[in-house]
Length: 333
Image (cartoon, rainbow, N blue to C red; front, side, top):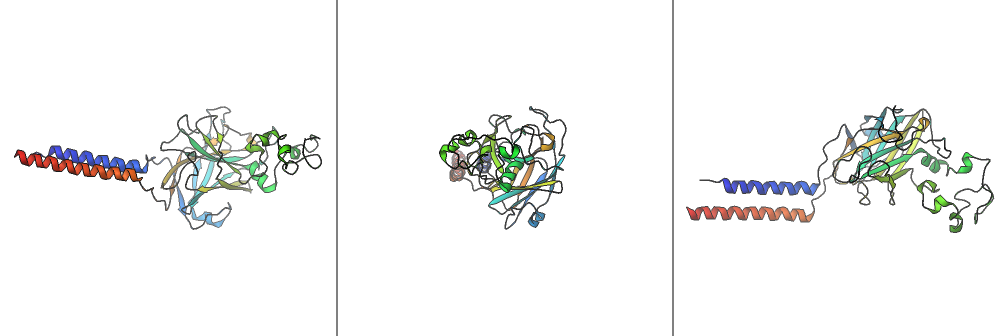
C-alpha cells in the first residue's frame, strides 16, 4: 500500500502550521554576543546606588572606537562598561557604570563637551547595522546627557552661567532685570518668541526637563531624530571617578517608533559612551557590539487571532484532504 501522497500532504500541512506559529511570535532575532540577564524583582530602583542593583548579574562589555563616520574616534578613552538590568514585569531598567576621572556636565561654551551614554535597540524583527541602522533598519536610542542631568539637579544652565560678564540688555516682553534668565524672565508666550530655540521647540533649549535621557530614532549615520513621545526616565550620578547611570522605560512600546520589549524573552541591544574631557561628541564615541538581554519573567506574546484561526483552517483542510485521498484509494481497490 502506497501512502506517500497523503503522508507528504500531512507533512506539508504540519510545516505550514509551524510556520504560522513562528510568524505569530515574530521573526526571532538570534542571540547576539554576550548574555545580559535582566533579573525579575518586585520594585525597580531609580537610584543608581540602590542596594537592589546587587540582585542583577553584572556584564562587562568591551568598547571599541567608532572609526568609520566623521568625526571619527581612533583611540578609546573608556575601554569597558559594566551593565546590569532589572525588570518588574511591566518596566525594565538598565544600570551603566564606567570609569571617568573628570566630571564633564556642561556644554554651553564651544570648547565644552559633556559626558554621555546611550543604549541602542532594534525597531522591528531584523538586527540593524550597529552604527544606528541603515535606511529601512530603524533603531531606537536612549541617550543620557550629563548636562541635562545638571539642568535637573541644579537648574537650567544658561549662557549667563558660562559668560557671567556678558548679556543682552534688552529682550522684548521679558520681565525682571538683565541678565535675563530662562525660564524666570520668559514666562509669556510673547517673550518666548524672542528666544528662538525655545520657540522652535529645540529640545536642547527646554528649561524644564523631566528626564536627563533623550529618546531618538535613527536609520543610519546623521539621521538621529528627537521623538515627540518621550517615555525614558533616568538618573546619572558621578562619584569617585565613576559614572553610574540608570535608564528605565515600560516594556511595552508607547508608539511604533519605539522598541517594543513586552512579550520578548530576549532583546538585542548595544551601548555607546562619550567622554567630554576627550572632546567626544556625535560620531566621536566608543561603542560596543550587540549583546542580548534575557528578560526574566517575560511571557511571549499571544498569537494574533487571525493567525490562530489560520492554523485551525490549515489543520482542518489537511484532515479533509487526508480523508478524501483515503476514500479514493479504498474505492479504487
